[in-house]
Length: 246
Image 1 (tube, rainbow, N blue to C red):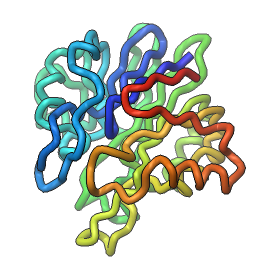
Image 2: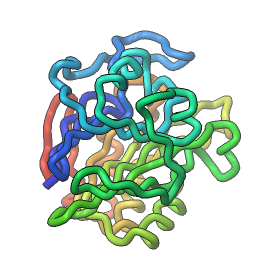
Image 3: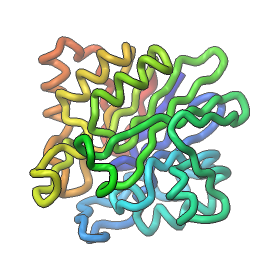
């Protein structure tokens, strides 16, 4: 059983395998952070998130994935898993992982998986990003995509890891006109639907589609894309502050 509470943007509190996991903490109030404009604060106060056993941080170098208040919260988490480059920047208390690295946390096996934050060849500009696959006895596999825009990367993950039960997909179809001719930096609704088919996912929970001005698609566009692919029954959407179970 996976229970997810959407805090806002890419930030979700997940209960899985007896642990409490927090994805990409963005907990600051509305404002401009490193040139990115945040329009809403978190739906839950920090005290409502604690205790946090593990933070799954796809990358630390973009404010819409780790803002100042989120950075402060890292010290309260039992473990912080992120990229090796991010771990070097963040320092003590963090664990850096490369794609396909594995580690065991209580009953949960964590596998770091690749992510591509833009079109092919964008890595040198957008920097390293990872996703995560969690597996626990008696539980289906849980995939947290991080800021990945590539369905080819999803296909690689599906081939190597196997079918995914529940996928938490970072969507929003982020586009920045000055970068890569406006190519997507995260999944669009259509790409999320394709990813769902590739993964064989029973349920997909979208995050990272609201709260910042650079998202070009919201939940309505994701719903429309899933309907177009005949996948509406697999989409499990949470509103801010709402919990869903799969």
